[in-house]
Length: 138
Image 1 (cartoon, one colour):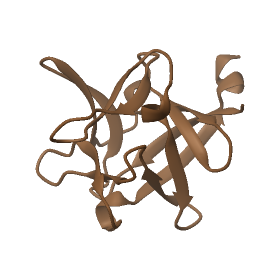
Image 2 (image 1 turned 60 degrees about the horizontal axis):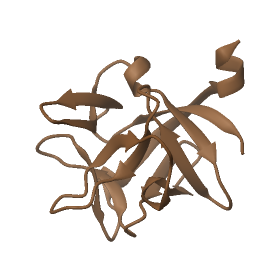
Image 3 (image 1 turned 45 degrees about the vertical axis):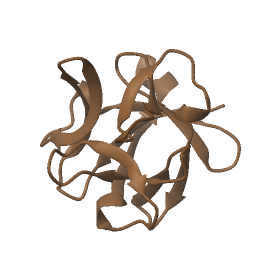
Image 4 (image 1 turned 90 degrees about the vertical axis):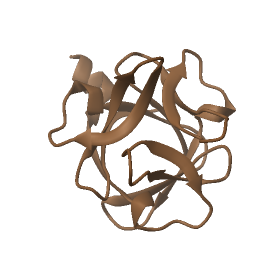
């Protein structure tokens, strides 16, 4: 399993970041500049499946509920932490969550949710692979 550091930018031109809210840690497209909270360790699984680990050392997962938020909450990855990476172009990707829906930016709050059956512009993310996780540790 290879590891890389990934940074994602949403359609609002903001970077995805771990944001602490009262009672929750969410992934939101809210940072103008990429910082440590915007870096995710990407683990390649079989096929085009990946997991993403946030700076808090927890895996991103789909939170089941009325709104399927993406939150960095799992210490050990399970099926809710797996995403299918679909490349749209050289630098644009779609991510499909375990619930079968695409990740997208909620226009009102910029929260990242797994709520789109058919992808639109809010589902496309510009991805940048910075370095391998091993190189970053050196």
